[in-house]
Image (cartoon, rainbow, N blue to C red; front, side, top):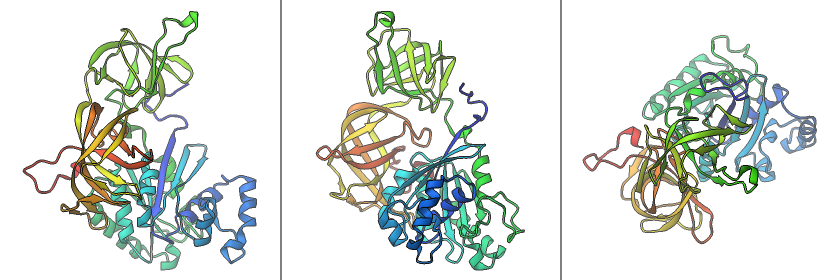
Length: 439
């Protein structure tokens, strides 16, 4: 039985990503979270004990729970995005442990693209660094609704409340320039376990929740767009048996809104209208389906619909256009993005050819300054671009819908992902600096 979106599901899923500078303790924190919660299997514990010699100290290294690559374990850094799943009696979790180095910006963008929450670690001795600002900017760019700034290694600064407040003040001054809805500050010691799973006895001045309790309690249901109906069609289902010869369903993952039988809908980009005849969820026909469920819709009218079309409500329509403006992170290490280059654009299950028509600026994600003279985007660069597509595409602004407002660019020759993009409003010609919501 699927819970309605009006109330929190009995066991909903929180996706969160971790980031931080080198040696801030990201992997150790996640290892502590799993270890102290008794959420690791016996064979994992045995593997940790067997690899204790990698630490050089003959003791269990909790970071090895997430640092899965041998090169990461030996260097003591995180290179790839390590995904881990765990659950408590209150909630399910998927962790994306993302790398902190600037050269792995693309990895962090990948790991954070579907996150509900970003967990950024700060070394209490170092405070807010350029990498802290970079990670916060990426979280803001990706419209991650919730952010936790975990001030780690508090044991190395004498559990100082003054130091905690100083770091929080520094980050508040920087984050005020970005669009982050909800920021929580937690002082912790991952190595000793303070404020990770259990409250710390060393910091009685901190009255907030420990990390695990915050992750269990943070409210994410209202982060989804339940007002604007969106179902990108991935598969058209036409059973060939005699018993179901009249059935035609349009399947995909609901990207927005709630669909019920009788709802008036429209198919874009064709703009054909119909009504929902029936809705089917993972367990069969049901009263309603909503984001982010996988669903199949039957319509009352026989309309030509294929993969890449989108079924939407008639009241809140997406945009349909050949022109796209977006913030993009460049991921291709073979060639930079340049004006005039052509790619395959994949957006809402639709694939079409597209050409880069403009590079408006490149962002220095440590200072947030914009290089308007930039002629290209190199590996891990983030900048504002414009595209023209061969066919009309339906989309929303990324700030309204993270699913229908995001796309990837694919190299036509190698078929490797070259960039990810977040669609935004065109820059006003009269303004030299775009409003923050357009970035």
